[in-house]
Length: 586
Image 1 (spheres, rainbow, N blue to C red):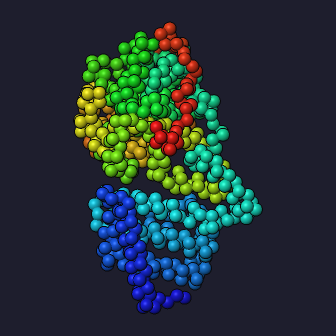
Image 2: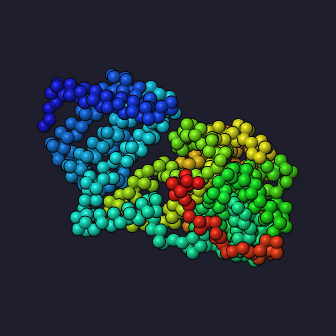
């Protein structure tokens, strides 16, 4: 049994003082390299070290718990090793599911040490004298570090990896190195077996044709599968930061095919991935050359004065801008809007706010005037960092340490199929919406027109996802109050930003909530809502039917003015995004 003599207090104090000096040297060196720039995180950590009493208490507690953990294992072996996880890690953690993390004294001690470190590092941050926003950022990046150094991420401290290596006579490690080399060539960690999917074959395979193309979009018209279609055409605006086929995955989970099969005359925008030819494009181009031009073409093709519209995520924000611009031009072209996980109020943008660096945004000001390209790979990595254990380290262990091929999953294939953005558009989007919340403030100016949300005076269906970490559902709910003259319906679905939207009606999984009342507070709305079984697609379809008029004879693809240019899914969706280095070189 370990007995802690009084001199250990002196030892802990000595170690703590050494750590403090090391950190002081680090902050001095970092500030010297970034002279003239503020670094709130380093300053906040430094303030904690300067608070000697609080710092020593944290260090002392950590070292004592380490000794206690070792003592328990020495006394009780594997039985004493079974303690609950601490820090921010959940009680049930897939990273530590192998029995040896509890039964083997060596691995049990490693895990307990990791738990203790995690808990005390969070205590460290909680005791800093900083504002809550700074603390939130510190906690986020601290958790990134803690997740990265988890013992499960290293071959010599992961019992599952060691067993796999022994059972395969080292083949698992060899396969892992092969996987790593392939991923290094691709520039990202593979999340799925990419050989299992091909755009136009088993993804984005709904029958249709490109009937219009300009420098920014291809407009796809999908072939009706019913003898008659609703007379008001349906135009879909997907996000410009992703490939559109998240809405047209495989045939059994394709939202596009679902609406085609329900008898709608469906058109969809496919955005071009940015290159040098559109490096100067702004939000205005995405509104005018993208959404408004697509609606104009659909009106000419169908000879119908108005269209119904669907916008997804940032596609919904661009669509809303287009709707207000059309109103300002006295062009009453939109009959209704259906928004999916779209924010118009960015006062609480969710976890993404930890990446909103004002100094970095200021550095883009000069570049926005000369143009450039923002790599979609960088954007994708940012979103992955919000869920690092699920979207980074899980694949690190599976692909490289265990040498396995990831499972086939269409959504993860799409997630890796990036789209690049013009720098001026990206800067404008972040500056006006994320940093300044100008849409909600009534100060968002597009093409010289102030975006007055009260101009939207037609039916609007707002869908949000309960576990969405990119567009928090409470933030999406705020759109209802910003649209005083619209006939708003709000629906909340289960799951997250992507799986919540892609919830096919044929499998009828999960549930959704409805409530015709729209109180100011989102939580109050939820308390009085009704849970409905199955997919929210059914509810959206019933709403859309009421906006779509009578049924008419289904049209063929293409007209004399707008002939078929090529079969769906078109050319733009097949273009591969640039690497981060290639994008920066433009």
